[in-house]
Amino acid sequence: MIFLDRPRDHDDHTVADFFELLCLVNMDRQISTDTLRDFIDDNRGNKTFQLTDNQLNDVLGQIGWRIEAFADWYPFRLTNSDRVLQAEDLLTDNQKRYISLLACGNLPFFPRANRQALTDFFEMVSGSVLKEMWPSNGQSIIVGKNNTELTGSKADRMNVLGKLLGGNPNIQDSDFRAGDRGDGGIDLAAYLTLDSWEHQNIVAALAQCACSRSDWTIKHGEITNTRLRSLIPSAVPWAELIFTPISFRSNSGKWAVPADVPGVTLIDRLRIVLSLMRLEPTEFQSIPQFVEDLLGYRLDVV
Image (cartoon, rainbow, N blue to C red):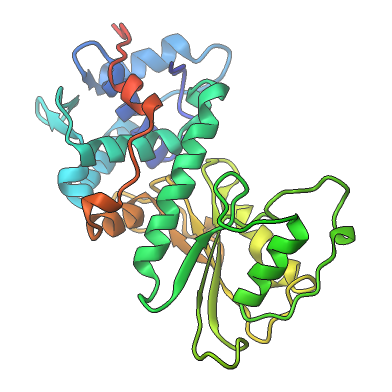
């Protein structure tokens, strides 16, 4: 169900995620910073990972920022002089949606058999967020192969997509390797048709959904105009977006490591939640069954 050993790096936001997951599955749904450190020491195996008192204080600062930023979507609170993290026994639907994004941003802790359902869920959520953010007279579509709204061969789908983006593609099946029915690295697309006569020189965007904590910063390379312009020649470069369930924030709410953020529009966990807050409940995706099962799971941490 869940295999917690150690955070994958020392960033405050990464350790805070681990803290939240451990709290969520502990018997009484509360965990102290001392217990967090002891648990990592006991389960890290042959990996070197230690947390100093200062690092633990920084993690608590990260939790404090999340309490403010995510408001009533946040399912945790600090108790015992702000040294113990506690989750409510009964979570609201919105708090379950936060947990779903938390799970999507921490795939290595879950069985491989469950990861596809989480990434598919995140792609659908990202599609809803892109639709909410995009001008109401525009269109947004899911392109990812598991949820795509386009039909036909890869060449057929890419030709349709290229025309929607304002390009004049002439893609052939022979442009791809035999049997390639992938999505070309594109998960989402959006466009704003400006008149009914001329489809070129419009406003458009391509987006990648990136759950991996280790390589999300380079995923945008798959949707750049530089990479795709030979297939989709367009007079105007499209905007490039990355959606990630990772909460890539410092304790002040700024980017955790500004130099790691590529030159794209970044929609991280907070920006996703803020967008979802503006949607009607009927527009939300169902909570993944795996997350519902996770919420009923308990681990004897101490």
